[in-house]
Length: 415
Image (tube, rainbow, N blue to C red; front, side, top):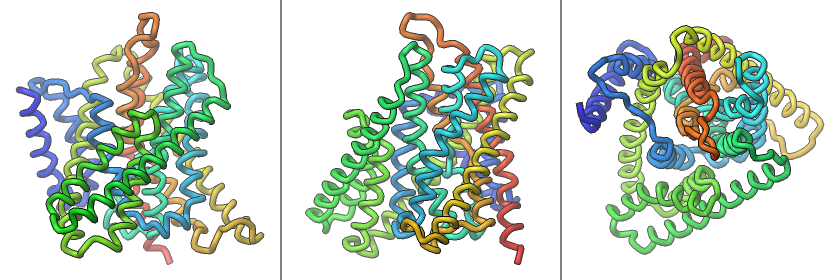
């Protein structure tokens, strides 16, 4: 079977299973992942490998842009303290926590390799969480925090990953240099995103009567913005997020209602197809990577992945409830700009904690590990790192994916 035939088959199965998921009341990301795993074990299906560069270019820009465009800027600004905590400090805390566990638990995992694994699994995938909780009645605050976290944490994880891989190849880690590069990546991404949003706004004003051209530019610009930002070595993720936020504010004043409806219809289809394809591709990776692991070690590595999953969930819960206490303390003392609307209660704190699922970004950067070091020797424990990363992603998506709707309904049912 040719590769294009496999893609068409996957898309057909994805659309059909999405409809079935609504009927059987099962979160469609979970159903698609299970389907992907099953398809991957069919002998006649060729291995479907993920190209990290294609994943970052094809999937990230539209998903990030759509989330940024639709997020409430007012809610985002109100909850910026919590969003920043989850998307920056929690990412690095998780990377360190996983590294410590991996170093002392998994054989042959040096400190640099442990930090590589930690960086890969440090960022959450709110696309999965939002897909699973859609229609469950989450508050605007919870939705905004989860979406806001996903808009920024990919950039933090990619910086941590870059320095961890450099440490494996023998480069010395310098904390101040890492911090400076992170700031440059973020600031540069913001500047590129602002510039592109200004340019797109100017173009839309000039061709305001040609809605087909406007829609085409709206579809193309996220990809172009990402490419430009990455070409000048700043954060493409942040650039696309800023672009989405800027165009969202611009659209309120300039877009006629008909154009808004057309744009929303097109983006709904694009995001639906990309989301579904992501979850099936995640499932397809398990049969592919399991072949690279010794059969006698498979269950042992699955056990390591389960422990890491528990650790990441525990770290997230501790940090979220710690943030809840910090916000309440700051509000009570009247310090800073913490308003009553920024406070977290027990319910949304627990839902946010349980929504820390890993996804396509973790898979892409894991599979994107270099096969060889600069001296030509194989990258140490590469297959082990990829296998554990895939299993952790599956554990979080299936385990938390199945239990999150139940948790949300139970919390909403309580008086």
